Amino acid sequence: MSEKKQECPSCAMMVDAKAEICPICGYEFPKQKLSIILGVWLLIILMLAWAFL
Image (cartoon, rainbow, N blue to C red; front, side):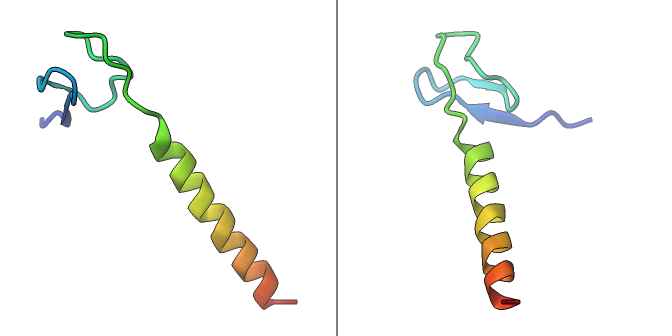
C-alpha cells in the first residue's frame, strides 16, 4: 500500500498528503486546491449554459 506524501515548504519534511498542518514545524498547507476545482467546474457549467442559450 503506497501512501501519498507531500513536501512541507517550510521544513522540507515529507508528510501525509492529506495533512492540513505539518506535524514537524506547524506549517498550515493552503486549501486552494478545492477552491480551484470548484472554480473550474463553475466555469464549465457557465460556458455550457451560455452555449445552450
